[in-house]
Length: 285
Length: 336
View 1 (tube, rainbow over the protein chains, first blue to last red):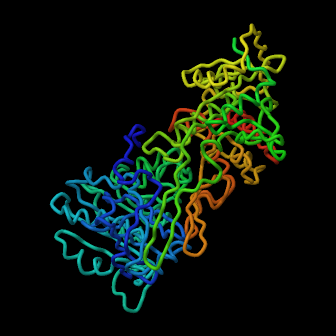
View 2: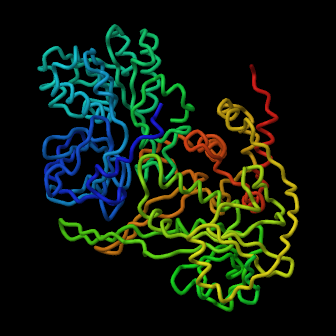
View 3: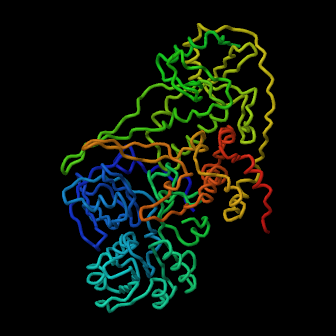
């Protein structure tokens, strides 16, 4: 599954100590929903480090603490983190203003298999803040549009307000050639004319054929479990289904212990696994 | 063979401590462990104790370790890394079990992708003076975990003789250099090394790791974990347990980021913001601890993360006993 002899990548970090963050400035903050903000951060010399779609970085509100987040996009000069307000650290991050300093360290983890997916049709299924890691892969596909086939995005959230990246979702992405965006919310709302219901059911209704297609999903653990079942029912093989997992992390470099599922560390060997790999792991996520 | 007479031991430690941090098994404030030698009359040597309450892991992973300091102003943050003090370190009188645990820590902190800078700084100039174990302690089972308790690999190996003097064998060039510094205290003597008494606790690990890989969802974990109260003493005294937390302490605009020992026995260890916890119940935490020791570490690094030091067996307030766990696992009949 993971390569036990992979070369030390700490040299690529531009930091001698992989546990010490680089300072970055918050360049821009976008309110995505009432409890999600996207932070654009930039280092002294531009982008603090390069990441691949699906990789992670530790974001540090230096006086409060640090937490592991997926990088929801990188541009030439900055990194973007879409962060939901759920606890002590994210509460503090949501109080941050443009111009303030944060710490970042990384990148960590394996990222999505962008090379192996080339030439395939792509199906992305996201739930809630789970669209944040998928967005890095979706936008990567758009940036390298000719490398990928048809792109379908199914995205659900509890309510209209909880849908992240609305401008991209409703205005930009549907304009991309050969791209379909399906959105759903859990309960009917007055102003909502779209689908109502959970992601797994909507997925089965849309029913994209497994032929030549890779499915990538991220969301709350319970959603992932049902989406995986639905995809299996629809005929997707275990190698055609990719997901990204979340565990609590402190170090990001496979030392502090807590992010293991079986003998795999999510910070090193994950967070991205295909279903074949996932089935070899204990069901503890 | 070279012999360091018992009455020269303190002097020898003082000489070594001139240019190194020397860690020695001692009783300090009624707690036994590997503490830094300072020739303090209140410290009582505990070289014969099997085992010390605390393991020597604090030499390479201090219980609390500052990482960097920071100062915040309105918009800016300035950080200053805290460097580990450079220089020689010596562990004196370490036993085969703890030495094998040190090998585990080396694998965890220095291999598989990243090197841990703090660990590396403490480890790189570390001289090992090991003591052969002729009389096992009441909970010792290091042989079952593959340790060579009479002849562990070290820079210097010492053997306690019948008259309590120490036969002294330098095994490496590093060991030779150290020996040269205290050569004046030693005598050349014909010695008879003691007879090794057998270890009464036997453990046979054949097939255990492979069998555990089939037992994640076996009901035996409900039964085994029922005694555990997640107090974490096993992880605290374990020479191989290395998990850590990273935390912050601050006062006003300044503070420091530090790391400290953590324990997989605690609920917060895997509790995520938002409340999801993949190991929410004690059975899950208990299972993860034993599987990490006996299966997961094996799969990743090719070794057991238990070295048979016996500390958790003696100190668990509720009688959780890893030897019994291994036996129970072996008794389980798996469906074909």
